Image (cartoon, rainbow over all chains, first blue to last red):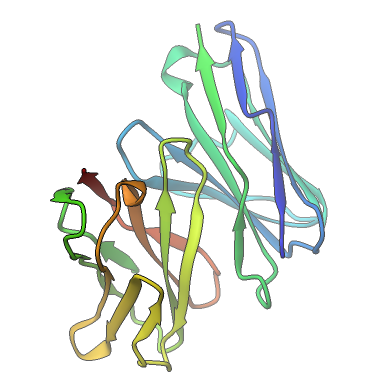
Length: 115
Length: 114
């Protein structure tokens, strides 16, 4: 079956630093990748949609300069949280779609803590 | 705009009880997909089912069953003879149209007590 690998699973960083989260589709080509953010006891909020080779489309209210998304290949997308602040602490989860057989496959998530 | 509503925030049941989780959706697309996911405390999303808008047949998988009714825009999920391991947050989600976005409901936290 389809597998999406997301790394790191947990990261603690200092305020003001940048953190990169990777999302890889291991056994299929992901036409589209999605990044979600989840606060404790809340739902998954879509942050952005990225298609390979093109700029990401951000949801309303999401700062594109703060959350940089790169989708360099059909198997890799990265989310970089720039100049992280404590309010960026959250659970980030990626999803890859091949618009076909596998539908949506989710990574295992990254728990970011900014101190 | 697409929207998914899960009116039940939290449900508590005792083991072996049946429980139904409600999901109501809104979309203008004629072709769309509905999903249910389980999120245990570890955070990972576990895929349960995908249903397309043209297939209104109910589905049963072991203790799980789903009732899809387009007339009421609902896609409800029933767990029969619940077990403690069913304790988790359950999300209903919707995708459709050109954007391929998957939109989640607010989730229902299910607690099954022994």
